[in-house]
Length: 176
Image 1 (spheres, one colour):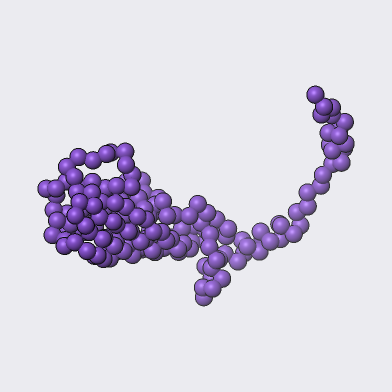
Image 2: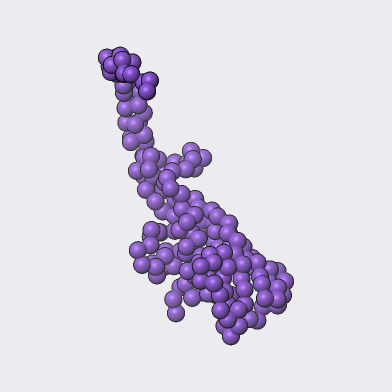
């Protein structure tokens, strides 16, 4: 049985009302997805379902961290990742395949598989820049040697602008 198979909700046996499920996603979960941008990570997934007749509201909370290389100092860091996503769930034999906010569940299906949805939500929660405020951690994961070189380069670097370039631009005819 695959790790992602544990991400199933027993929807047909669920009574109307509020329900809460908690799942864990770790390295073995991400290994099941081909070309995954995540190799190492640990997440807690909380799924809240407000079941009603025919239509249910579902909120998925993603909270955890992923092992990444810091874009600032090139150290390996545990990058925090969070996200909250809302979906609608309709029990219907045929659905609109182009509707991204609605999951359709056939009436004869006993459970709802959420592994792929959870994986996609974790992936879109990843920040574009692998950096965060790590000064509160003890010890900090930062590579101090690289940060020192960056600070030295920033203070010694001065950009000299040739004034002749600007003088040549002033001579251009801008009136049409």
